[in-house]
Length: 278
Length: 317
Image 1 (cartoon, rainbow over the protein chains, first blue to last red):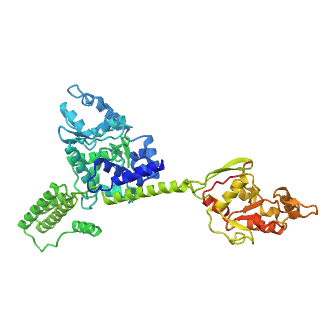
Image 2: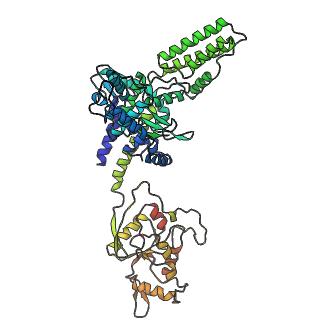
Image 3: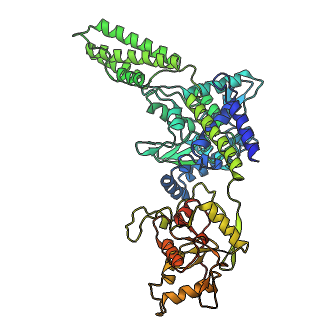
């Protein structure tokens, strides 16, 4: 048995050999997941969706206390109501999403016809537009409630983002998201990876930096700092501002590609949205 | 890299160049136009910084307030930010998985492979678990392979005074062999197989309560010391004599002497290199005529036994 493990390790090791040159998304995903599991050997895989609370015991105690009466509960009931309220034309979300509401693990996905990454919020607004409704704002409010409800109904689904091999544009979108993730930006010259990969688990002022592995599973979140719900792209905007880079618009191509890359990295992790965070 | 980072920070935070006195309106307009151009150039490749647009806005406000020098200064800052943002984005065009990440994973994997092969090859060399009887109950002696296992509380201490906790020499007495863990394990196996070997814990009973080597019997050094009186006033001499005959296989001759030819091999230990209790027992036994070649001293004692992660047992009542 041990020989088999050693052989497997040796094989996977050689797999990373020429990673810098040309690696496939599969190889990069394996590298990503191995990196975080090696960095946090005591954290079981299914704990990574809990973010910083998988590695910070004191933060976890507070969080567990908060989860006893989750601050996102209002959003859940609002979201459920929104989901069930028909549009002016008599149709509803269920007509756009026949598998719904437990559909979170189907997004983000590559839309071959349009050659772009479609996220769940984008799909929701496209559904609204198709039925003559005004689009929702992407950062907070009704869309966050709707996403919270969909997320809650999708809890336990496994992250499973696909990059179709027969469409080079899908790979290009992944590559753009990856470049965004690792590129230094802003006046402070930080990349996402500096805090949430290299220094994950270290303390920045009073906060422990959360590992990036698991970041996408629990959005939207109720964030105590916001005092309300917010979407993943709202969080992206906050991060970009913190390094003094000009943020992009929510659901911009940049952020959708970033979400595509990040979620693909987290394939295999169970969804646990909505979350409660500091 | 570090130098580069701080240079970027400094350049961005400080005003680019000191302005000569009294800029004109035309200079201010030109500076703002140049700043806007630099901002757009950075934005075109997703490299715009957070405050560049705000600086340009402030420069325009200064222009309207006829504060031309201030407008030029603000516009110059914005222009520099635009330039730096553009250069940063150009440098980061091919950003991807960093080498430290690959190196970290590779070193971890190399370590895992080394550990996997090492544990495979040492498994045969490491001790095979075996059973002994302790207080009539079977106990398995094995090594602890839990990598997080720690020493028990009572063996953590490093500060002790002599007397009584004096460091012991490597040899207890002439002719008495000093042994280590592997030899101790061999003697335990022999004892368990019914060979004439006894493993003796020389410590006082309160120590034994905290744990001892499975298969050992407790014969405290105080019990057989002829100098010490027993609990009921019985002389140590008598207690030693009955012990030798009843338990150690010594035969009383017709003349009232002692025949040690059938005596068992005694393996004595106590708390370890800072404990003199087994030493005391060995001296007593030698004085009584016990052949030194039938006495063995496990000098490492409980301290080394627990350090090696070997099984200990507490008496059951």
